[in-house]
Image (cartoon, rainbow, N blue to C red; front, side, top):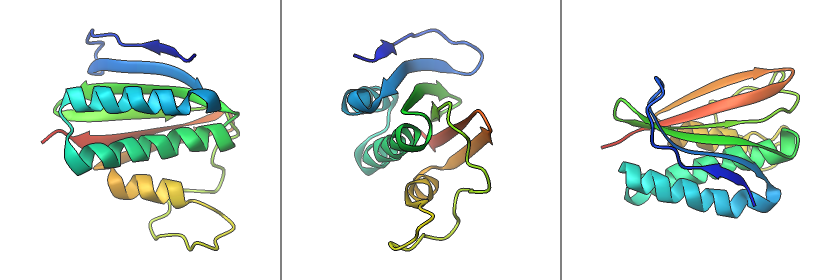
Length: 141
Protein backbone atom coordinates (compact mmCIF):
# COMPACT_ATOMS: atom_id res chain seq x y z
CA UNK A 1 0.00 0.00 0.00
CA UNK A 2 1.49 3.39 -0.94
CA UNK A 3 2.18 6.04 1.65
CA UNK A 4 -0.48 8.61 0.76
CA UNK A 5 -1.30 11.94 2.31
CA UNK A 6 -4.22 14.21 1.45
CA UNK A 7 -3.17 17.39 3.26
CA UNK A 8 -5.25 20.53 2.84
CA UNK A 9 -2.88 23.22 4.04
CA UNK A 10 -1.22 25.95 1.97
CA UNK A 11 2.57 25.77 2.16
CA UNK A 12 3.79 28.71 0.05
CA UNK A 13 3.74 26.60 -3.11
CA UNK A 14 -0.01 26.28 -3.28
CA UNK A 15 -2.46 23.92 -1.71
CA UNK A 16 -1.07 20.41 -1.44
CA UNK A 17 -3.82 18.01 -2.52
CA UNK A 18 -1.95 14.72 -2.59
CA UNK A 19 1.48 13.33 -1.86
CA UNK A 20 2.37 9.67 -2.31
CA UNK A 21 5.36 7.39 -2.56
CA UNK A 22 4.82 4.70 -5.19
CA UNK A 23 6.25 1.57 -6.79
CA UNK A 24 4.90 -0.61 -9.60
CA UNK A 25 2.38 -2.28 -7.31
CA UNK A 26 0.92 1.12 -6.39
CA UNK A 27 0.64 2.59 -9.90
CA UNK A 28 -3.07 1.94 -10.52
CA UNK A 29 -4.11 2.99 -7.01
CA UNK A 30 -2.09 6.22 -7.06
CA UNK A 31 -3.35 7.03 -10.56
CA UNK A 32 -6.88 6.77 -9.15
CA UNK A 33 -5.99 9.14 -6.29
CA UNK A 34 -4.54 11.64 -8.78
CA UNK A 35 -7.67 11.43 -10.93
CA UNK A 36 -9.97 11.94 -7.96
CA UNK A 37 -8.05 14.93 -6.61
CA UNK A 38 -7.60 16.53 -10.05
CA UNK A 39 -11.35 16.30 -10.60
CA UNK A 40 -12.02 17.85 -7.20
CA UNK A 41 -9.61 20.65 -8.08
CA UNK A 42 -11.64 21.45 -11.19
CA UNK A 43 -10.25 19.53 -14.16
CA UNK A 44 -12.99 17.89 -16.21
CA UNK A 45 -13.55 15.95 -19.42
CA UNK A 46 -10.69 15.42 -21.81
CA UNK A 47 -8.34 17.74 -19.90
CA UNK A 48 -8.78 15.56 -16.81
CA UNK A 49 -8.18 12.36 -18.77
CA UNK A 50 -5.13 13.83 -20.50
CA UNK A 51 -3.67 15.11 -17.23
CA UNK A 52 -4.07 11.71 -15.56
CA UNK A 53 -2.51 10.00 -18.59
CA UNK A 54 0.49 12.36 -18.45
CA UNK A 55 0.98 11.74 -14.71
CA UNK A 56 0.72 7.99 -15.34
CA UNK A 57 3.46 8.26 -18.00
CA UNK A 58 5.70 10.15 -15.57
CA UNK A 59 5.15 7.59 -12.81
CA UNK A 60 5.80 4.71 -15.24
CA UNK A 61 9.05 6.38 -16.31
CA UNK A 62 10.08 6.77 -12.67
CA UNK A 63 9.45 3.06 -12.14
CA UNK A 64 11.22 1.93 -15.34
CA UNK A 65 14.13 4.36 -15.42
CA UNK A 66 14.29 5.98 -12.00
CA UNK A 67 15.00 3.23 -9.54
CA UNK A 68 11.70 1.35 -9.32
CA UNK A 69 9.47 4.03 -7.88
CA UNK A 70 9.18 7.62 -6.85
CA UNK A 71 7.11 10.34 -5.24
CA UNK A 72 4.14 12.19 -6.69
CA UNK A 73 2.71 15.42 -5.36
CA UNK A 74 -0.34 17.29 -6.59
CA UNK A 75 -0.90 20.98 -5.85
CA UNK A 76 -3.33 23.71 -6.72
CA UNK A 77 -1.68 27.12 -7.10
CA UNK A 78 -2.68 30.37 -8.83
CA UNK A 79 -5.45 28.81 -10.92
CA UNK A 80 -3.28 25.88 -12.00
CA UNK A 81 -3.02 22.23 -11.13
CA UNK A 82 0.59 21.11 -10.80
CA UNK A 83 1.80 17.55 -10.46
CA UNK A 84 5.42 16.73 -9.71
CA UNK A 85 6.82 13.23 -10.13
CA UNK A 86 10.32 12.65 -8.81
CA UNK A 87 12.64 9.67 -8.62
CA UNK A 88 16.13 8.78 -7.43
CA UNK A 89 17.39 7.30 -10.71
CA UNK A 90 20.49 8.24 -12.73
CA UNK A 91 18.85 11.29 -14.35
CA UNK A 92 18.09 11.93 -17.99
CA UNK A 93 21.69 12.51 -19.04
CA UNK A 94 21.73 13.93 -22.56
CA UNK A 95 18.07 13.03 -23.13
CA UNK A 96 15.62 15.90 -23.14
CA UNK A 97 11.90 16.24 -23.62
CA UNK A 98 11.64 15.67 -27.37
CA UNK A 99 10.02 18.49 -29.34
CA UNK A 100 9.13 16.19 -32.22
CA UNK A 101 7.20 12.97 -31.93
CA UNK A 102 9.63 10.05 -31.67
CA UNK A 103 9.05 7.29 -34.19
CA UNK A 104 7.54 4.04 -33.06
CA UNK A 105 10.79 2.29 -33.92
CA UNK A 106 12.92 4.75 -31.94
CA UNK A 107 15.50 2.97 -29.82
CA UNK A 108 15.96 6.07 -27.67
CA UNK A 109 12.38 6.01 -26.42
CA UNK A 110 11.00 9.34 -25.27
CA UNK A 111 7.44 8.84 -26.45
CA UNK A 112 6.03 9.18 -22.92
CA UNK A 113 7.95 12.38 -22.27
CA UNK A 114 6.90 13.75 -25.65
CA UNK A 115 3.27 12.99 -24.73
CA UNK A 116 3.62 14.80 -21.40
CA UNK A 117 4.97 17.83 -23.23
CA UNK A 118 2.00 17.80 -25.63
CA UNK A 119 -0.54 17.55 -22.81
CA UNK A 120 0.83 19.99 -20.25
CA UNK A 121 0.30 23.72 -20.47
CA UNK A 122 3.77 23.90 -18.92
CA UNK A 123 6.35 21.20 -18.20
CA UNK A 124 9.42 21.74 -16.04
CA UNK A 125 12.27 19.22 -15.84
CA UNK A 126 15.04 19.11 -13.24
CA UNK A 127 17.49 16.27 -13.63
CA UNK A 128 20.89 15.29 -12.35
CA UNK A 129 22.96 12.26 -11.53
CA UNK A 130 20.79 11.51 -8.48
CA UNK A 131 17.26 11.82 -9.75
CA UNK A 132 14.78 13.58 -11.95
CA UNK A 133 11.80 15.73 -11.07
CA UNK A 134 9.20 16.65 -13.69
CA UNK A 135 6.29 19.00 -13.06
CA UNK A 136 3.32 19.19 -15.39
CA UNK A 137 0.99 22.16 -15.02
CA UNK A 138 -2.50 22.70 -16.39
CA UNK A 139 -4.63 25.80 -16.12
CA UNK A 140 -7.93 25.21 -14.38
CA UNK A 141 -10.55 26.62 -16.76
